[in-house]
Length: 105
Image (cartoon, rainbow, N blue to C red):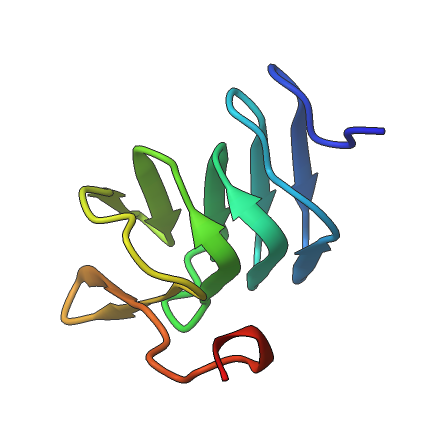
């Protein structure tokens, strides 16, 4: 069962953990952090209440844009696993993990 389907929008005051994928057309908006255990395909907006220390993390990313606080970033590089997004100098930085996982050994 898909929880966040096309067109579904959910808003939360605190942090949010999505178990599974955030699908195309779906939106999650959180006042604090957003963690997605699957692929981020829909819109993730962390720190929606102005929290510039909020982060977005996931297993992988395949979306066109992310938001933290009042900053919007167009996503161009979706290569890599475990994206971690945060604000630095009013720009959203997207870092990918370089650590090897169990399946990579």
